[in-house]
Image 1 (cartoon, rainbow, N blue to C red):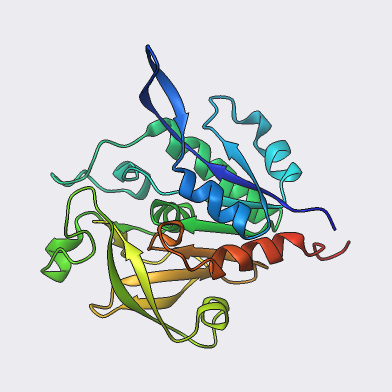
Image 2: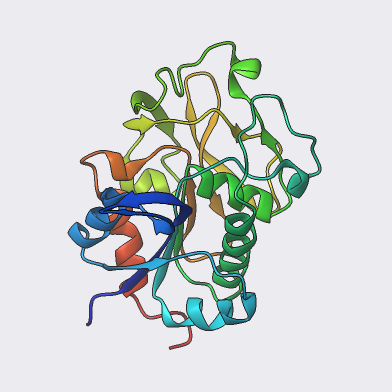
Length: 238
């Protein structure tokens, strides 16, 4: 069977290369390498203004990763911005929500990473904690600015994530927001010591997973391998 095509969403930010400073579609190469090392072919999905192509784009892919990034626009879950909420990427929110909805409608395997998990929750009607230290009383989920930290996560063994990772896993972390009220059909399946939800699964979807950590920043490829495996399998009805 051919290697599956795994679409990975990108940032849209000003960037510098050579003599140029231009707006660019950006993605950390750790995502690309993680997909490649797991047996998939990464395909970058920059945010598009025209959403009419979303169904076609998702239909041509075998799996999707919604990458990490800036805070989700609070108005999308009925909230006013917290003073510590970062500037949202409106174009990314719009594009990636459309990609997620299409992936759900088409039963395409997908993985949401950090922001990707938060966006999945918003997509399903859930809400977010806008500044986690206000709720948990510490900054252990992002202790050093611009540097990934690590902490342990407990996973429900009966879940899909638990079957891949086991009951305990040490994960790379960098986030100041988290799931608050869960969206429709989402089940929490992993937790940090402070009970912050660290992974969710979409009920009834053949592989619909969000993780709050950054698996692309570590050496544990198991969650990417599981995504690639699911993307390689024939969809139901084929």
